[in-house]
Image (cartoon, rainbow, N blue to C red; front, side, top):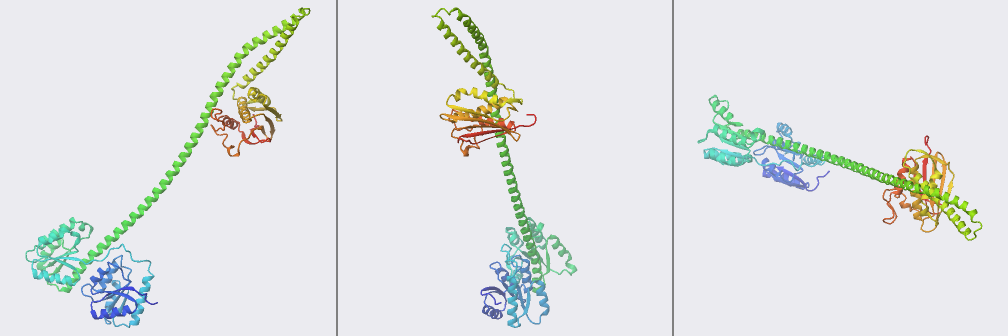
Length: 576
């Protein structure tokens, strides 16, 4: 597989000649090459757009190629980038060091270019097959900031030049006060403070103690992260004459002691080791912060899910409570309707009973005297046989007395029906259904009049065990509504049937009927199709509740003549 055109490659090579040759060859293969001369500059370049491959020379000024590979592997942003290490052919032990540090492949600079191309293609293929791109949120690379403290200008300049060649960003301080001022201004900005403990005008132990206090105040010491303190000791650690000074420096807070007369290479290695510790600690802290952030994200997601579940549960409970409240309101409304109707019926029953009683007393008096008058007229009639003028008057009086007798009997029957209807005994008892219906029709005679004909078809058994007052009320409400629905002349048909354990009463009329859309609503309390003031909407609702109390049913449909037909069904249970 050829290299995709424009594949970004970072070349780290200090030799200008070798870098130019390698660059031209890689660009001929289709790569987009960027080059740095040191590992430190390469790390800075990696803070920007990441390459698909890093090709690094093992021998670099300052940080070697194996240290560069190690830094790449320690950083979450660059750890997946393949690293190809280049070195001399006879340095076999360096191949082991390079691979152990994290390089993906080792190729001698003198290797055949075809083999080198195959190795590069293989590395790029592995890169393309990786799980995903590098984490863009990971920490980037930067040049380590070094503060050199030495009272001697020549020594300070030499040390700064050495560290600069190693790739560090170096600043100088000629005194302890200047060093402390620079560190106190921004403790987190420094990676390492290198001080000459035996330099003129410097108290190495005191300066280490002050620097350590600044580091602790900035929070670095407690977390194990902060700038490193490296002291240049006047004598090596193995020289017994300087053990007291070395101990005081360590106790004051120095992290590393380096002999002042050490070679530049040794000094660079010791400083690099000290900085590696700091960088590793920073990476560890960054990883811990990422883990905490992820844990917080998970907890936040779980909390949001729990809140959503709680919200859903609360909504469900609220909906259930609303349903229960609506049902309670409906039951309360029904109960209020029943109580109102019961109170009205009780008052009506007392009123009707009182009126019947008041009418019955003078009626009995009139009936008694009507009989006396009729008997006296019978005795008077023979005495007036010869008086032609008085005979017609006596006959007319007889006719009027007989008419009065007929009216009085009708009043007597009306009082009897009122007394029957006013009975408020709700106990179930045997009731003669035809008689109860005829009583209702007699009470509604003024509404029926001559314009409505009532047809009776009593085919059921005459007696039913039920509540007589409630049965009268149901039949009266339905017949009264039927009479109101018939505009002119019409017919109301009342039929009874007893079959399959059910006692059925069907009341149909020749009115306009009930529209199908309203048949489910006419039994609702306060629903009426009558004009305002002509109805309360309670009659059929009460009838429905009465039938429910009898474990029965009531329905409405279309009658044989096109009007409404109400069918009442009451079970003929044992004991009823």
